Image (cartoon, rainbow over the protein chains, first blue to last red):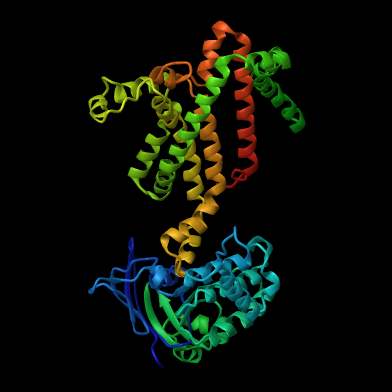
Length: 245
Length: 262
């Protein structure tokens, strides 16, 4: 594996301590773990929205955080797009406006026409052109996730963080959006950390998993490896192992 | 008890209160009438007071927005004890008697006030000038703006700001494109209420700025003065203030934050 995103971070939140080390190549990694394990906190720390106590974070050749060397690149300069649990589309902007916002953030010198052209092209690429004029409130859950992904791509990120992107969808929508969303995410050839509670998501993402429990990464590997030798009851249950460890 | 009967019984005290609010307004409009309104408006007091009120209240509103918006943002994001103390201080003028506020303004900015010598060395005279009118209006109007603008900023989901920044948007661009538009209904409602309050300011202005025709005499002060000379002018001025207040209130309810929202 060619390591793109590498991190070793310790985040302290009140009495909770998160201490995680991960290496990602140009491919998705599913992040699993029980509620309260620190999954969202880890994403926020990688995005620069939470300041770690200690540690290092690098993306490609760029060092984004290094406590010892006092490096802390601000969120907006990290080029790591974050999709929170609820898609968080800007409610006052249309779907197109949401995408244009990201394109313009990446290319501040572009004219409005150039920005709109790129946004339209991205929407077309992800088969979302008919949604362009609609406000987020007029979109279905699946459509919102689609636009959220288009928006994230509009910022030309070098890494993606997705926090339970399918959690808000019903079973039918989840199947459709899963196929679409994760196929695109995998095709991006970017390091992508995807929080999920669903083994089907892991398979759709290519099968690599990191399991976080109580603020520690306790196991990484393929879904099959986890099933064969689960290191905790949670992992055993998640991977569908027959016997407890 | 029968719920519909309870409902009917509730109307009894409600109607009394509504009558108390409505009766003076009806009386004002009834007793003024179109003819007296025309005659009253012809009084030279009216034009001067209108100009003074408009000029001072617009300037006060500009100051309230320019100084109050940063403070509202800070109050919305300041957690802990300092934030709640600052908010208490900012809300204090709402419950203060205006005459007391006027006296305090004099004690602070008057010629013999706490800051008097400093202001004099700067060649600034505030008390009993239009500057004093503006200051009094800012003092009483700012809390209305602060309260709604703070609520507006608080109502903006932090995730929108976080996502905007991960998309490469810096703090200023995120504020102007995301936070501000989302808080705007509350901010505009606050500005409208603050302007209405500034226009209606009476007690603090009288104490701190005086009642000088053509200079510090605003609409409410002119009503007070006209009562002794020309009642029709007082009524005409009251009708104007009523109309402006109604328009502002309707604007707040139409474009302001939707019920149930922040």
